[in-house]
Image (tube, rainbow, N blue to C red):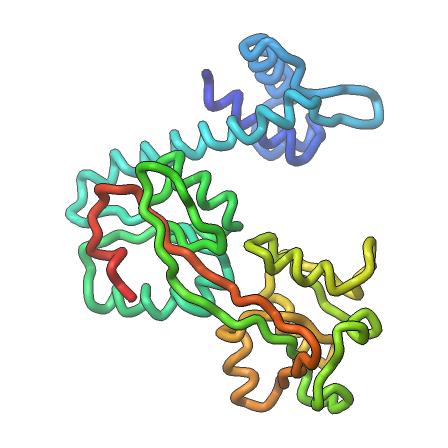
Length: 281
């Protein structure tokens, strides 16, 4: 399967416009059309639904998109690995969620870079599900995620455990004595979709069905600036908000009649890999 066609497919699936795809790839629009036609012929399915006003993926196109991305990633990674053999450093491909990286992993990597230059590290930041799939596809050597991996051929251990704290700006004094569960929907809540463990479900169940949050984002570290500006409140990992609590710029709202779950982070890697790095605390 021609990966050039796959890259064209992935670009078109993203921008959903033949002209824009051609411009991004520096080719003629007819080239894009021909590549997609070749790919559809090869897979035996229509990948796009075309009309004058809209271009969208078919059901088969949506399914194929993930496989195409993994094939392209695997090719790029294999080329990088083959080229790295000419150098003395061993390659170490690390995948991590943004929160784990910011709160726990960055200091460890800093220490490693100072103490051990035998590894050439490549760090990829993404969501837990994506990272674990990349690990199983052989695209990563090690992952730090909020989801465990229970699969033959892989090792998985708990890496860190965080408390989940309800925090707000220190300017807000109204709930310093605490809040009851029934009072939460009356707050301006900033929602991060923790699609991990029972945390996401816990937060959603605190609010009525189809509740519209004041603000939603898929990266918990990006909520801090809003909280510091005095906007709303949010449940966040204790390690993420610790510096702001110590500085007095954020404060914890005590939970009076309910408890928040803990957040577990996991370290996963293939069995048989060099364990030198994995043993770092």
